[in-house]
Amino acid sequence: MKKEEIPQDDGALNNLTKEVVYAVDKDGNYTTELSTGWNVKSKALDVAWDDIAQRIENARQKVLNNQASPILYFIELRLMDIGIVAAYTGFWKWTIKRHLNPSVFKKLPQKKLQRYADAFNVSVEELKTMNVHDD
Amino acid sequence: MCMMTDFKHLQAAHCENGVTTNLLRSVGVGGLTEPLAFGIGSGLFFVYIPLLKINKGPAIAFRTMPGLIFKRTCKSLNVPVVRKKFSNKEAASKFLDDCLQAGQPVGCQVGVYYLTYFPKEYRFHFNAHNLIVYGSRGDDYLISDPVMENVTTLTKYELERVRFAKGALAPRGQIYYPASHVNVTDEQLRKAIKTGIKRNVRDMISIPGPIAGVKGISYTGKKIKKWKDKLGSKTAGLYLAQLVRMQEEIGTGGGGFRYIYGAFLQEAYAYHPIDELPEISKLFTQSGDMWRSAAVQAAGIYKDRIGSQADYDMMGDYLLEIAEIEKKAFLALRNIKWNS
Image 1: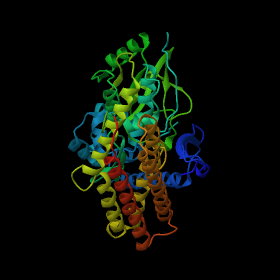
Image 2: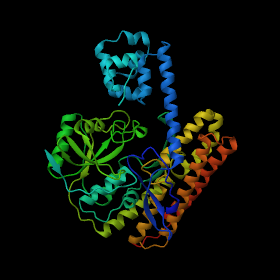
Image 3: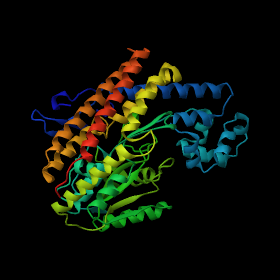
Image 4: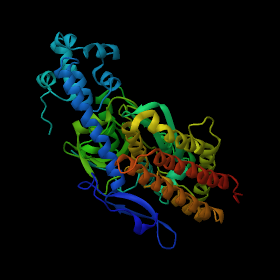
């Protein structure tokens, strides 16, 4: 890529920093230049986030229809999977799968709920109601 | 309490290159640059692991495993390394403070999900990010994140949270730094460059199995042609978007690290005046350009502008062609007659 061809499009990093890109100058020597972004990759990021938004919404519907416990919603909201939840809570994976069942979830003691709440960075009340206010 | 170490922040394309370069420069390896660190550490790679999923998408990497660049570069230059992991947060925090007290800037492996200064769009559960802690002021730690233009800060709580992020590649508070001041001669750099190139040739050409190295690139090209039928248009689009993110996202320097490698070969020429090196560098520029053309093609598909089987075929063909170029480049590197 030639230095003057480096894209300077809008990107999610705009307010934070420009990034270093390597390119060749007119004599063919490598040099670095700062770039604000490239729409090809910001679109790739948008595609990923659209998919996440859809998965979160699907999970919310499942919880509302009593097909899953709120844990499913927070797994999607926090971009986790069962392995990551297991690592943060200390529960076994199969235990977490059991807790995804709404009737099992309803009987969980406060202490166990607190472990989930901590892992998802919410209060127990928010965990139960899916009512979160993120900063 | 206020602690400051003697440290200079320099922005880099990639976090591990940047941490390696900046830490080594701080102990006396003045001539080290990001491309040299990347090349000496044999950073260029390609692998696609079909059975593994990352964020529900394909596991594709354009560079070698996290941690290897620092490890190999230090080893090649004969720099002793201190590396510590912790099971307990208090011990990790005390060790960090002791280092800073002693005037030692340190590299830290961290998770990105709770990295507060990153924009939300970039905060996935990715645990192999690297930054340098170079001092503290009150409750704040002074942070040099090499991918950022300027230095920043994290509170004690924020730093602890990212150092003890959980999940795959959990950092477990990992701290690393060069153990002592060193005097690296040009002769040592010359030798390290040669070793780095030879190891990279091995990783890209001779690695067994179909999924890694230049073979991995053509393997992925062939797979992509089947994605539309096998996965359906929506998932296939998501997969292509993930490929482009791994290739172009902040940290790669553009073109899936291929441009940084081109820059490395040009810099290598100053240490090894062999005419093939700048010529082979051009092949990597060409490969980087092709990767970017492929990304534009992929974007056409995930933006829903195009999406017929012919478009997927064309996407796959880009990768087949790239594999040929990189094969040619690495074979040429393998055939170099080194003078020293």
